[in-house]
Amino acid sequence: MKKYLLFLVAGSVVACTTTQTEKNDSKSVIGYDISEEGEKRELIAGPLTTVSVWEDYVQAHNNKDLDAIASLNAEDIKIWGPGGEFIEGSDNHIAFLNDWFTANNPVWKSNYFIANEVIVKDGENRQWVTSGHDVTQTLDSIKVTSAQVHDGLIVDGKVKMFYVYERAIPAPQKPETEAIKE
Image (cartoon, rainbow, N blue to C red; front, side, top):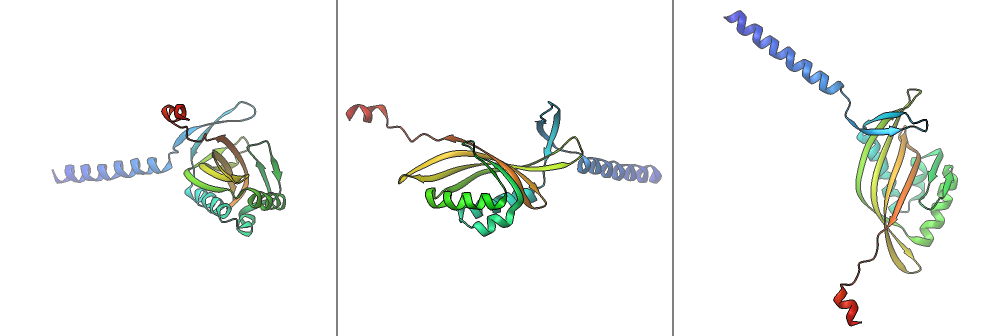
């Protein structure tokens, strides 16, 4: 009986250890990326260290801290803006931001951050952060808020490239009864 109990306990320990190891080795597939060639590639949950880089990057933008932004930029950074802008190189990005910050005073309110990664054809592991923000800008003395989604590629703790997608958030409408009184 003692041998049977010992065997049962030992078997349970091995089973628990195996199950835990399998859980740690498995990837959490969160969706798919589709390559330019149409190849469907697994998107998996990425490391939260990339989220920290992106949070610091957004905060540096809110602080209008061009030195901090430059320190987080890869030298060969590429940026696709919501209005069709394309900016290449850290120096060009900083020059663009200097003018934009002065003219529009943008401020971001963050809503979410998602770390994800994808293994591409040559085996490279690309680590991305997808984030959502409300950005308020002052345009001709009027505050305008829009919703933005950012996809940022983080490589070695630097922002290598990012895309900005944007939609307007309409101003609150007056209730119909108030509009009729006017």
